Length: 355
Image (tube, rainbow, N blue to C red; front, side, top):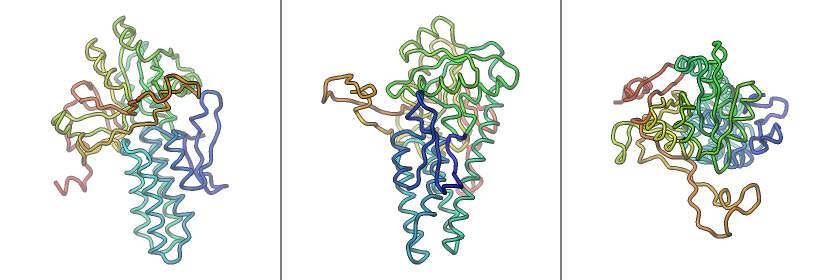
């Protein structure tokens, strides 16, 4: 099954429950907007492209559940639910962006019936487009890899971080489709272990050779020449680095990405970011991006077992910024880009008309 989709029989959202991995590969049905919001916050569904689809389906779900009298009141109710979905996780740009895409469809409607059908059609279209984009992205990225090479990846940017196929791991899958044998070193990605719980699961299911390492072993692996490229995904890419980074651009990805980029730079290992065009935010600077901080219990406990004294102060950011000067290639569905990035390559026609 796809990571996230619409269940026509139950008229609700269905997703792979990633909190149950690796023990169980099971589906979860979000039948209400609060259930979807909770699923996003708990990381049942995660990864920037998958969150984009979740946002789109969330508006469709809100449109099908709202029953206020009068079309204006109905639209207000849907918009309120959509806002809750859009703000469930603040760092990834795709979530809020696709919420707005489907809301725009609703605003063009003239009845509740039309709005419900149009929202669902738009959401399904966004999910289908994500799969097609990732396929094209993977094909472009595969040109950067040679037969027999080993890729290091951080967190999970595979099929389970998208609707299907994946971004960073999609590059690996596309390389295999092209007849290249590419193996993977997966960082465990503490504290929630997306690398060990999720990346290893899907790589083994696809018969890709994978070796799991503790996060702190990544430097040693590069030092010993075990890594030919580091390939990661992204939750948001900004072209304006703001006060700290200037005009070079910044990649926001899972916490620890910056460290991998620094070590890769030290050892002349190519550092590749694989992300769809929709992840590139041309409107905001790095200063305006909120880095999500997660529950301290994620560090104080490991699967319910105490890992630190109760009440120990915790700093638990979910993402970090990597300056573009440490990135060798940005791969999207339209091609491979070498920084510094040309803003015009990522602006929409509408954006260009207003600048």
